[in-house]
Length: 170
Image (cartoon, rainbow, N blue to C red; front, side):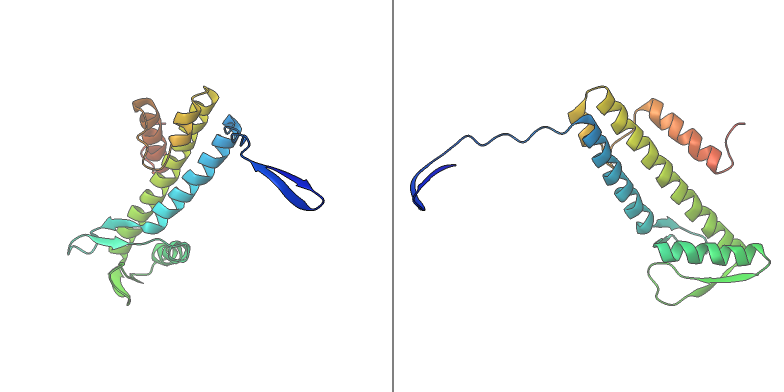
C-alpha cells in the first residue's frame, strides 16, 4: 500500500505492488529439510516400537531420552550378570520383571529400531540434498519422514542398517 502524508496528515492511500517473497534457495531447502527430517526421526524414536518379548502378545514401548538411557543402564546390568531387569511397556505405569533373555531381546529390538530410524533419516536428508543439488527444488522441499526412498537409496539404507546391526557383508 502506498500512503502519502503531508503535514502529518494522510492525504492519499493506494494499493501498491506487494513484492513476491523470494523462492528459497537450494541451500535453504537443504537446511530446512535436514532440520525437519531430524525432528521427525526424533519423534519416531521417542514414539517407540512394538515387540512381543514376554510371550503374551505385542506390547508398545516408548523411547523418550530418559527411557533410552534407562534401557542402556538396565542392559549394562544384564550384560554384567543380572538375571532380571525391571521394565514396563507403554500401557503400564509400574514396572515388571523381565528375565535377562527377555530384556536382552527388548534391548536388541529397541536398538535395531533406533538405528533403523537414524539411518533412514540420513538417507532422506541425502535424497533432499541430491534433489536440491539437481535443481529439483519443489521435489526437495517435499521430502519428509513419509517419503518413500527409491530402490537405489533403499538398498543402500538397508545395507547400512544391516552393517550397523552386525549383519552386513564385510
